Length: 313
Ligand SMILES: Nc1nc2c(ncn2[C@@H]2O[C@H](COP(=O)(O)OP(=O)(O)OP(=O)(O)O)[C@@H](O)[C@H]2O)c(=O)[nH]1
Ligand SMILES: [Mg+2]
Image 1 (cartoon, helix red, strand yellow):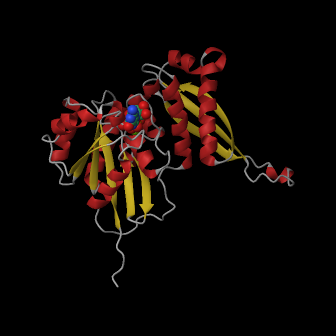
Image 2 (tube, helix red, strand yellow; image 1 turned 180 degrees about the vertical axis):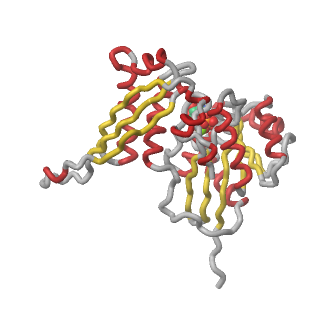
Image 3 (cartoon, protein in one colour; image 1 turned 120 degrees about the horizontal axis):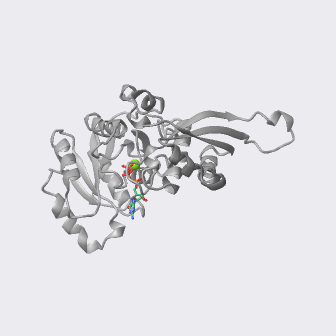
């Protein structure tokens, strides 16, 4: 009998900032790996995750939103996203449910016209509109590119997402299992921890401050205290994490710390809870705030914080 062949391949999620790429990817793999927020330009790096089931393996690449870059960090982010187009088997282009096609969408369509890879248009956030309107969004988009498929979904509510996974498998070639089935992501724990802290900063801070933030993990070490407590049945230890929130101005530093340290405490408490879930142990999180003026335009500082073209594969 012939061997049961499986499908596998690389799929990038691209689109303008804030359309729900990271929310969709997390939903499709069933785990929160990429941080999300209601502020644009949340994702700054390519985040790879893996879905393995009886049909085969999908390797998703979540990417930063494509936008008009205003600094070197922005240029880096856009180049990360556009670069993935050349290395995948399938593109998911996410858009908002709207009949308005602006310069941002046209720019992305032009990029996609230059590649031969099939593109699925994903109209996300359909929970926000009347179902009767969906046809008008489809007809607004259908002629701007030769789409392999057009599918409306809600990443937040999980509407039609199973259907999307099915479509993705249809377009993937038969191929090897690239990663073992326990692999979920290429992101090191340290990186996810830094991102969770940044996510809380994005959530609680306003205006331009969150965009000028980077998070650096100075130390992440399991406390070796179990030797003194041999009777304890608690198998998990305590993780000591020291992290620094980097911002661009002294005035921002004051806001991030807040009155009597209240803002920093809020960010720290919320981040700690999620980090504890992630690491499945108790966490002692110490946060500091440092000013690095205009780090988003400094090659060496961008590199320090992990945003460097030289690191791109
Ligand atoms: N109502 C609704 N909101 C959604 C849906 N998907 C995502 N969102 C919200 O849209 C906002 C942006 O989501 P993200 O997943 O961070 O968007 P993104 O495209 O990854 O954004 P960038 O990383 O900045 O490019 C968040 O507030 C999400 O909760 C959806 O299906 N319905
Ligand atoms: Mg994102």
